[in-house]
Image 1: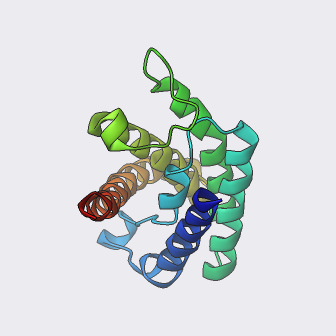
Image 2: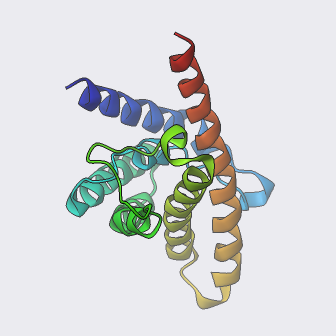
Length: 172
């Protein structure tokens, strides 16, 4: 029960931060857009059923679209990242697999794993978001660049916030 409440609170805070802070922060003429609402999606447990990631990614996308007038872009991208998240987790799984209650944690799985996992989930979201937004074949190179740079910034942001919260918990 405590884990569910913590997950819901994480989703609420990430959505509020995306809506009121990061949605208005577009850097380098749109080449870098922070997608902080993915913070909660990236930290979901690793062994849930695939439909759970799809539903949660879609719900986060709908909330973000409604609050930022995204026109369905965030919903489409949330569904895509939710669809790919279990596949990415399997791709990066250690040889012995994950524990039954494993969550993305740099302490247990290492910073290299956490960096790769976070970047791939965020990049899948950003790539789909910018490809759908582009809507034309000649804008695909720009969408690829925007997705890579936005995913890099968002990954640094997510890992930075995560390390701050883990640091506070370990000091108690």
